[in-house]
Length: 187
Image 1 (cartoon, one colour):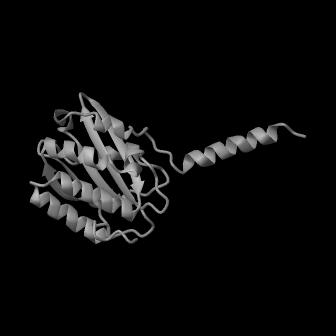
Image 2 (image 1 turned 30 degrees about the vertical axis):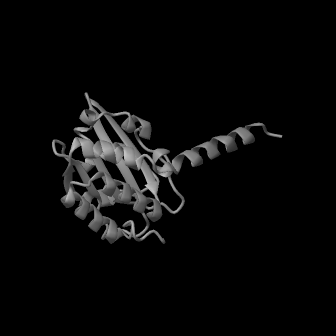
Image 3 (image 1 turned 90 degrees about the vertical axis):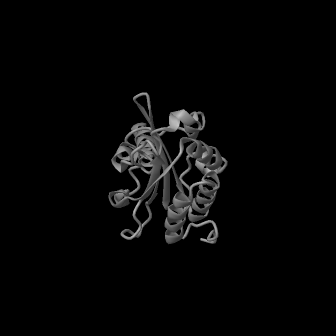
């Protein structure tokens, strides 16, 4: 028996299993963001991207703090190779939130297990990602979630923005268009 075959198969399986969830730069764990203070969140960007099979018509949606800027290209080094992020070229949204609202948002969304663990859910077509720069270090987190989990993320963000009607309205409109508003969890 040729002993090279099992090691060759093991090597091929290792490559195949790493391809489906690989990305260029490693993602940070959610706990990195949860441990950030309000003042650390000055450059936090939050982004939703549809990464499912049907393209065109679902632009990405992002928002940041009042002192931050939205730049979808900053997320590119962290893209998972198994997913298509072309919709980031059509970024919409662009509302702002206070650092305190962002801190509440990170705390609220962290209650959702699939997000907290950075999971790629079965049937997940929504990329929920956060990117932040602190003292020259960039951290990025992502979870690929189902519509049901996406709806819960939207609900938790909505709860974190009680005094931000413009942000709540824009996020609600985007979520509704994707079918992941909190009232639509049946998908």
